[in-house]
Length: 120
Image 1 (spheres, rainbow, N blue to C red):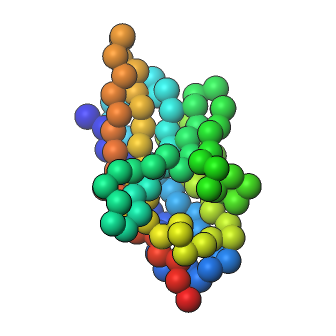
Image 2 (cartoon, one colour):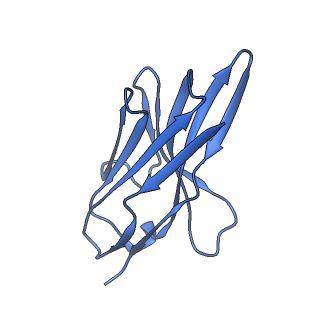
């Protein structure tokens, strides 16, 4: 099994910064990608915030591009999301995920989520 433990969420004022961390453990021998999704209040779906592939390629949602940086520590199986210039619309529950490849199949695992609230 795979476990993901997130940390770093909280209450921050508009314009502030946060750094989210997510540590993966368990059967994670072949990671395809790690990253973050978020679910805003009142929304049913989770939206991609940022992800990083095993080759170092990164993707960002347009809404956070230029304000956020995703990075990964391959030894510690940890992914980080540095978020700057936070806006109230960044308020959401942020979920870490990891995509693991086993043979021909890919499996997504999710953390329990960490709340980020941007408010004055």
